[in-house]
Length: 110
Image (cartoon, rainbow, N blue to C red; front, side, top):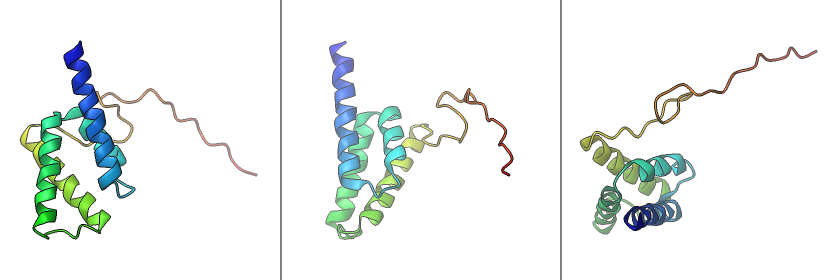
């Protein structure tokens, strides 16, 4: 149990780091999904890969959108290498089943 709790704590810390440093306002869901589905070691690897690009001036460190885009690409690439799907289809839960939410017909406006 302690081992599992430690892994979850590390996921939370990594997610907080992603959101605090690389969130361009559109990446929150992606980072949450990545933190939930990917091993923390891969997320660490992605962050380090981005830091290398920043250090070599391949990406402007003051451009949050460029940093977020580059990090999403790195994470997506690592996920694909491991066979992890980080895309959730609209109307489907993470387990692949349709959501239980019913769509009510719209009332006609007078």
